[in-house]
Structures are given as structure tokens and as C-alpha cells.
Amino acid sequence: MLYFVSLEPNKLIYMMKCVYCGKELTPGMYRKDIYGNVAHVGCSHLCFCCNRLVTSKDVKLPDNRWWCADCQQKEVVTNQHIEWVHTRVRKMLAVHGIDDKKWPKSLTINIVHPKFVPGREPTTAHKFGDTQYSPSLFSKSYNVRMLDHLHRIVFAGVLAHELLHVWQFEQGISLSRQELTEGFCNLGSWVVYEQMNTPLSKGMMLRVENDPTPIYGPGFQLVKAVYDNLGNGSLPDVMKELKKM
Ligand SMILES: [Zn+2]
Ligand SMILES: [Zn+2]
Ligand SMILES: [Zn+2]
Image (cartoon, rainbow, N blue to C red; front, side, top):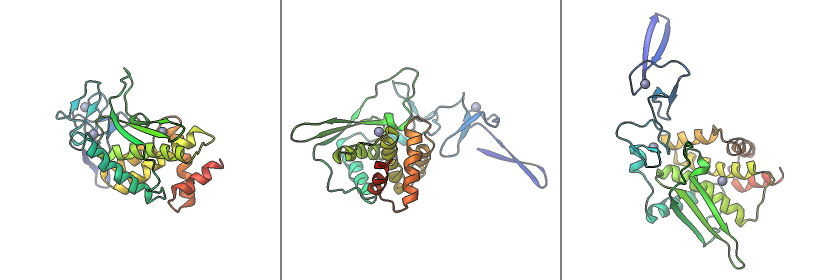
């Protein structure tokens, strides 16, 4: 919440108030969510999934994750939900040159409960999903494991990341640095968020862009620069460049 206070006719300064306690916020001493709400760090909690400031209507999960009402409403729970998102993510990746007809048949997607690590908040993108790969003599198989209680937009972004791991395995691609591998997968999340074009997906794009996590954040910066430089939106073309790096 912003309150504009005019001190002099030509000088406008603003004062921000905490959405929880209503008291004034000091510059640099508060947190702001993707919807522009501001609050004291000590007064507030962020939804683990969408980073929105949570309110009294929201819940705290048994593993200490705060979970907002919006994410509860749009949660991916059933196999039908998963398939609904999966189909759309594949279409959105196809727009960027990832052939929708070449995905392996032996690909399963499951929702898992997180391994709760006390004192560590499960808030960064890479902990929201992972991909298990089992090579066999006749066919490879993949199991994508997704964190439970995800909003469908966040689920889509995370799934895009994991599907690009599958795509790299399928193509037999092994890049020189983990930054490039994870950065490429994060670019997959970013293009999917870009296409969904909602306030939440835009907030998630910023989250990918400003990810402070080692490997993932710097990796995205590197790969995004290649993507921007090529300028044709093609993920396979980005990969051709990454192979040279
Ligand atoms: Zn406060
Ligand atoms: Zn949320
Ligand atoms: Zn990854």
C-alpha cells in the first residue's frame, strides 16, 4: 500500500505502510511480493509457491511451507490436472522448436511430498521438481517428480524445466558445464511463463531472471544471453551454441 504525502508543492515523497501491522516501512527494511504488496520482514510470510505475501486466510502446511489461497485454488492434484498441464507445456515448448512428436513414451510424472530439511525453505525452482532417468537395453525411461501443492502456472514452469532435461537425455546431449544444462532448462521455464502471460507467470519470469541460486541463476544469465543474441526463439538453436561453449 502506498501513501503519497506532499510536503512541498513540487516535491512528492511517498511513505509505505506494512499490509500486516499498518506501520510505516523504512526503505530497504521490507519485502515486496510480485503483486506489489509490501510488509515488514518480521510481520510477513511468503507463499512457498508463488511468493505472494500470505494473509490470515492462508495456511501453513505441516512441513512449514506457507501456502496462499490462490495457489490452493489452482493446485495441481490429480492425474487429469497433470495431463492438462503437460499437454499445454509441450505445445508451448513446440512453439520454441522442441518437437512435440518426439517425446519418449516411457515418461511418467508424479507428485511427491518434499523431503523436509529443517531450517531450509523449499523456495527455489530446482527443488520444485527433478527427473529420474533409467537407461535400459531396450528403452530409456523417465520419471519426473514434482513437488506437491503447486499452482498450475508454477507447475507448468517447473515441468518445462524437467522436460528439457528429458529432451537433453533423449538427444544424448552432455554439455561441458552444469550451468549450461540447468540454464537451458530454466530458459524452458522462462519461455513457458512468457507465453502464459499472467501476473503470476510474469512474476515467475522475474524469479527465474533474478534467481540467486548458484549454477541455476548464473546459468540462466549465460543461456538467456545466447537466446537473445540468436533472436529467433529456437531452443534447439540455442543448444547448438551451448554445445560449442
Ligand atoms: Zn508490519
Ligand atoms: Zn501462492
Ligand atoms: Zn534441472
